[in-house]
Length: 57
Image (cartoon, rainbow, N blue to C red):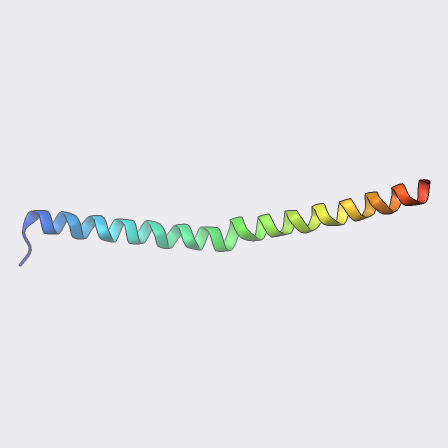
């Protein structure tokens, strides 16, 4: 069947695959929406500040 080094290589492959899968799930569900949401909020704040500065002139 498998020799010991092939077994270790297979386990390493499965470990890396699993870590990559969960990292991708984490990035897609938490990090990217947080990043996009923060960018939108900052854009809105900059537009409000520009309008406020324009009104004060």
